[in-house]
Image 1 (cartoon, rainbow, N blue to C red):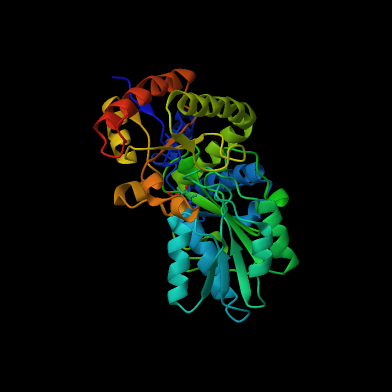
Image 2 (image 1 turned 135 degrees about the vertical axis):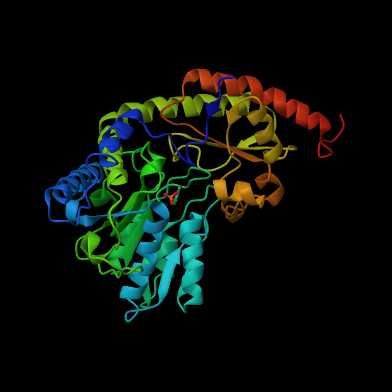
Length: 387
Ligand SMILES: *Cc1c(COP(=O)(O)O)cnc(C)c1O
């Protein structure tokens, strides 16, 4: 059975070109970029080339990028790094309840350290209002962190407007752009943010490597201590093959992004329309237009998302009920609950996330299998009223 992978928001396959670029750095070119001999210097050169490529994708300067172990570390570095650096100015952080766990759990940890955190309200699409950001800012506010696009329901946040509000108040603004880098055109200048997190494995790079954009002049303290790598902001020997892979993924994304975005958006719309038209009592979660090109998040009344998922998996179709973390915990998604979606509807949600490897044939297979599975599950469901 040919399996179909529709969980690209959880991770993506490393593209063959990316892997090919990485391989020599495991074998022949194994130097430590911090060494001054030729082995070290060729590794350093590769790291700097990757930095240039990533900077070009983001519209940033190369010296505004530090490499990390992924989105989680970048998010932790941004939140804790600003909080520690600015603790004389204030202790108030503003974020949202729909952030990835890497932000939400870090914010909770900061609360235990004596920081005060405001979780902004979101509308029914999960979007934050820039006006609410303005109202939440106090003289003690040191950071606003709002994700660029949500990994579960796909809504894109008005980050440009939010960053403008923060800047006018003299407050740093961070965005978790793990879901958007490599997927939608993005420039740190246009967004106007001071910090931006990204992760290679969400756009066909390798797992375990990411980066944090830090606008020149931003005050930040590292939370891990050791060597002087990455301008003293991220200690530890560079993951050279991973960084090379991230650079290659950035280069490929920059070339293919416009065409891929249009192609994947068309697949998304076809899948969404097919489900909404083909299965009664289904609803789209997240914003209908302002959403990630590859994200389809649907609630299907009277069935458990988990049951749909397992039945799809038996047919070789791999989707998700939300974020990988909430799927494992069987708790309704914190994101859908924050949007005011009732727990029973949140339990009925399923997420398909399309990526580079998906085609129209994949969409057709879902549209063939899903209605059949839902009909079968509803026939067995005590939730469906007879008649
Ligand atoms: C995947 C993801 C992360 C975590 O990135 P890792 O590289 O897996 O640590 C953070 N934020 C968002 C929005 C994500 O989708």
